[in-house]
Image (cartoon, rainbow, N blue to C red; front, side, top):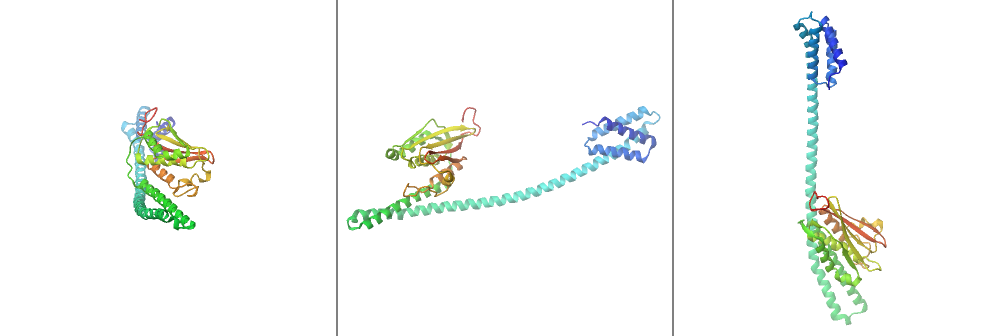
Length: 359
């Protein structure tokens, strides 16, 4: 930014007036004008240049003034100007000091808050770990008495069926069914505990192999229901093999289990979106009412009673925990009687995939 012509002329006129009259008023007016330049943010190099120019003009236009006199006349307002710059610089330093103090105080408050947050996070992590270990040990210890109940119920029914009344046989049947249901719930609780407690060991996973294993495990269900599972070309992902297999087993298994009159059909597909893969598991089953589509991801939430469709209502919550641990998200789109589409995301195997797909 250059000192404007009008300001130069005004300043020169004031300096010339001061040189001719040596009046205090002219000096004050010149100094005030110079201070206005300071306030306007004009660099002091340009102001010095202005004074040098004024000095030359004084010497050129008023030869009656000696060079020394002209220099003194131009220098006194310049000193006043430098004092204004000094005061402005001091004020700037003071403002900076106050800003630094405020920043240090803000940093101190933030560091204190972060320390408290880290402490709460550590306490929460310990609490979660204790809860998971408690769930694991309690569930593990409960399996033994349940096996005894189930085994002795079957033995009693086998050896003394003829001695039991119809009510007695029915009670034993209820006992065996209850023990089986409790055992199944405990197994799911163990899986839930492991999903949050197990170390996340990432490796390159071939999803085609995962789905081949899932289909083999569900072969009996496929034969009973006349169901089918299909998928196209799927990417290789970096994930925990066992946990991702559990996700597909739960989602595909649900698609086969919650079916209507038509044989169940489950189709798996994938599409890349930016730096992540979006997977879909679509079925032609019973569907989920809109008001329940968020609730189904909560633990122990079931839309159907255990007598209607077996299950503990924990499988989808496990899936959600696994996907979130991998840095993804899981959601559902469904219409009652029209089936459901569960979608989840997984990061590509490299943080910056090349054009056209993941590395």
